[in-house]
Length: 320
Image (cartoon, rainbow, N blue to C red; front, top):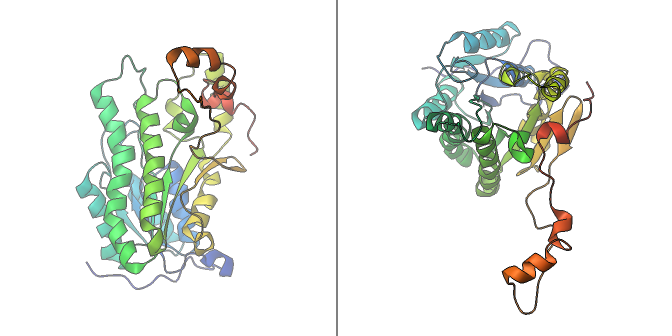
């Protein structure tokens, strides 16, 4: 396929809107919700965008070209450059084809936003192997598949940006989401090591933990009063709040920012800490179970993190 000429950006864009001029971005799961908003804002800031979406349901069932086609057409209608891709991220071959779409249409790959995801919520004592594998494959393996395909090109160009989506379901915790939480915490580890591996090539990798009402979040149960209250708070936060941070992290203005985990909750942006020791104890005679039983409560016990869900921790109204 012939490579298109460099895009001139969205018609009428001023200098502020050219942060990503000449850059080529891949956004997975870009047919709806957060991915769609990121793809559109990347284009508004001058990027040429591969809009990837397999077109399945929020649980990953089925496929359709319509979501990706619609967003790609929106970008073109605004005067931007876009190409649609319908591959699943859950296989290495799919990840390779997604990146190849960028190379075929635009000749390079500068930005990858690993956003594609599904939900298969179930309590751990009921969760099936298929429900586990489907979520892990889409979120965690999918992030790896697209990253692995793009990394050699960024290494050669000595420039690039990876932006991955994590979740407070893993960072804090949520009931009935062992598969989703494990995948999202795995993405944090993946992101940190990608940042380390690619630092010498001027390639950054960061995570965003988004709070936003999307069709996937719309599957949250609303059976109890607490669940209903939580859902009402999430409904106030649209996916458009996430996109500005993603575009910033994709730009040269964020060239020194890597290996970090950010959260976006309405108009609030937060920076998460990393796993590091917060306190230590030692005994000159070494530890025995009995000594630990005697001393634990008055030492390490003071620093234990409460067992709570994301909704319990972030229980204040969002600023929207």
